[in-house]
Image (cartoon, rainbow over all chains, first blue to last red; front, side):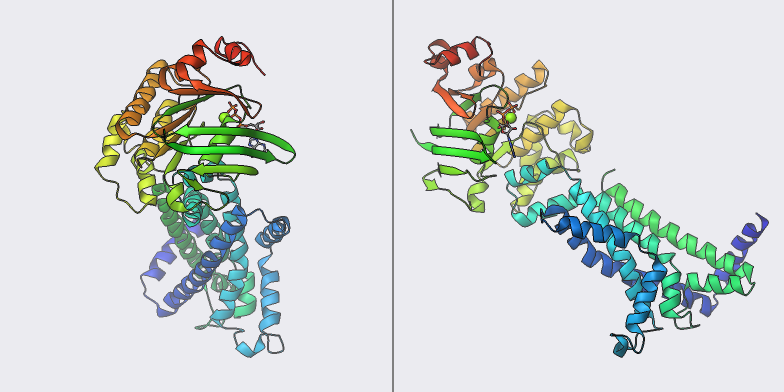
Length: 231
Length: 239
Ligand SMILES: Nc1ncnc2c1ncn2[C@@H]1O[C@H](COP(=O)(O)OP(=O)(O)OP(=O)(O)O)[C@@H](O)[C@H]1O
Ligand SMILES: [Mg+2]
């Protein structure tokens, strides 16, 4: 317990030491996760919505794939991305291995199934009578889809929250494909691992507290959005 | 008299079941037409076809001299609206729900919305969340939402089911007034023959997807041609 309290104090001191290395780590964490989340949302929400609205025969198979994707162990994702991006891999020419780009790719692969899968589930849960009702009130097909998405917005926000939580705290994949290189690919989670391993528990704990605070703030912001959505 | 709808040989099938089989029916401009019949007769199905929400399996719907099969242009679709048996409100305020049809048409939620809220007695609930209302309040929101777009045709699917007598009277009065003031054509499904008698100019009885009898209201009740109509009006079970 005392350690935890010390961690908080240390975290506080660290943040206000304005140590550039620390801010670099925080900033990279936010950039990588923010970009990965944005890509997953831009691609995943429309795909999830389309799957939720359609009556494709293939949907069963796609659903099974997405649900599997939602439970993928991040290290396995990291391993595959590593193999693809390594010099002898099919995408080795990009030169992305051990760069933030590789970390973004890995996080997109982790976050996308969460966003698309949970969006699909909540869209499917919308009362089918709603679509008839809005059509009857004069909605065009696009307005009808928009209405369904608006009704599902609380669930869509929850999907985004789940995906954010999944990747901001993820360590296995970013460690493998980023390499935890100081000043280049070191993020909060990999820095925590490193400092724990080298016995700098105070620093590790302080970084952990910062990570938790970031996740907490992000979730509060999204909850605020959800509340404004009417529940 | 001008016909808003002319239906001929209209059939609707779901799988192998024929749910609707109407040889001929005309709905006149500006009338209140009541559709009565037991549960499962196909009344709601007919309303979905009249609102162009589903295409018929075969037969013809002529709407204001346009034969409409397959794709119905949005401008035509927007002349007709339904208040469904079970109101489906959007996750939004009462006012936003009532303004929704106007928003779809790119129109502003202006005085018309507030006047309509007042008309259905919901002005004090304008900023309440719609899904927290009582059943009767939801029905009134659904009616206000349909009336505010001033449709040519208003389709009402048991708009007063499960309501107390006060709300029933209120809704009947609003429908009657709107029909008189705006010349709106109304097709009203009701289980309550007395409501049909109070509101309608003409009444049709549906049984097993077919129209058994269509008559002007006084004749429907006082001089029915079909024995099944006579029995239905007396409140007996008919099949
Ligand atoms: N989409 C559908 N697919 C299959 N069957 C349907 C569908 N919609 C309606 N039916 C069937 O059509 C029949 C008529 O239904 P409909 O809802 O039109 O009856 P109704 O006269 O409105 O009854 P109620 O008074 O109980 O509302 C019912 O047997 C119903 O099960
Ligand atoms: Mg019905």
